[in-house]
Length: 177
Image 1 (cartoon, one colour):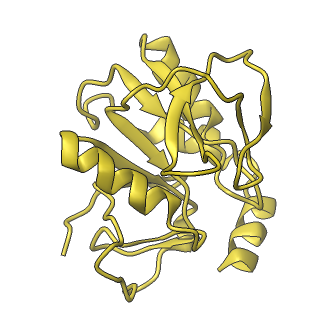
Image 2 (cartoon, rainbow, N blue to C red; image 1 turned 90 degrees about the horizontal axis):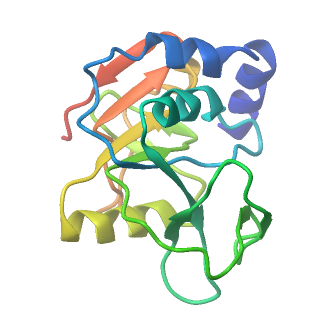
């Protein structure tokens, strides 16, 4: 799936901008704070979608994996300094204020039509989403290339479902089976 994602990224460099254009204005619930991510390894670029949400007045946070504990979502103004977190990913420096997102834009390796999401395998997003869902509603939007869809994922009990997926081909709400 990683190879497929890298090939899709190379073949469709404007996919992020196309997906942001295809998101219907009324598709998402009201958003005050959204969590984006910095793409690596051919991940779908959330930048154009983040710019659209910032223009609507929403505040952006990025994930940060601390040395101990669950992934956090921390304030990330567009010009903030980044450094590797405990997972080796660029993130705002320790001490950046945490914010609870209303919307989490989630990267993935594969998704299915039932809301299944296959992540990178570390479980960071699943644990963070479970924690968020215990404290209130959060809308989880998978951001992917259309070619990352599979028939059905074999999920485990801790895997957190997507509410919707946005690709360069369009937006789709997903039932959680």
